[in-house]
Length: 268
Ligand SMILES: Nc1ncnc2c1ncn2[C@@H]1O[C@H](COP(=O)(O)OP(=O)(O)OP(=O)(O)O)[C@@H](O)[C@H]1O
Ligand SMILES: [Mg+2]
Image (tube, rainbow, N blue to C red; front, top):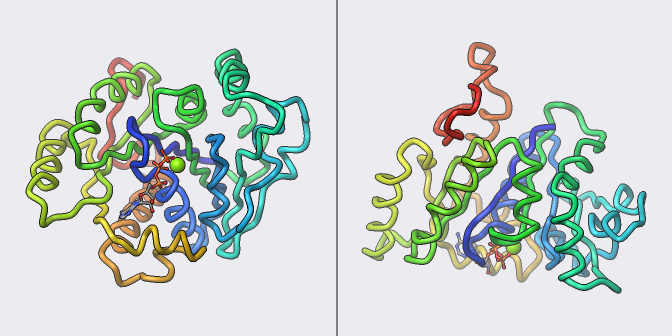
């Protein structure tokens, strides 16, 4: 199973939206997809049409119910296997964070036990970095897609995230979400990020679309319902890029599709 973490250094950047939309798009192309939620908000399943928060999930394992997490995965209507975080009844945020910090490879080791074929793709949603949940997602992933919004805070926090990804030795790429091209600030920041990140920046931006939150409110997938929108086109481009990364042509099978940022000094 190929594992991709979707991270950001700011809250509300679009991590959960991207996880759900990309998972649905990949599944629509016949790919086996697992969408994993490493976030105590426990909302990922809502993006797949579930109306109530899931009870069991990854946190069940953390809470000592060894097998409950394995039966917690839900099959969405569009063919994605969704592994929610679950509800944290009876435990505190501090206790969960301490448990995650004490077991830095917990999520990696759990996902290694998931019985899916090698070509399946797991997309991992998490809390904003830095956090114990985001560190677990990065540790569990072989590739990190970092979401950046076109604002000053996202730009200011980017170098720390880049440094953390380099330290973790993870391939990574960056994408800007919720871009309004008519706003000069947005186009300026996208240009700045391209200059700063170079080939590590995906050739796509994801445009802002009011249909994205509206689709969530009505329990529908945005891309599958509005495939003609610019944002759906952008997300389709990223899904293609991820598919190429996961299934590279034979001649570059040992290499991730570029553009990526790689840890300095790490083996090729
Ligand atoms: N391209 C977009 N255009 C318009 N709205 C968007 C876009 N992407 C995400 N949103 C909206 O932005 C809000 C935050 O998105 P989302 O919950 O996916 O972010 P997140 O990074 O997971 O946030 P959190 O830190 O709360 O986990 C949601 O209301 C979502 O519908
Ligand atoms: Mg989220």
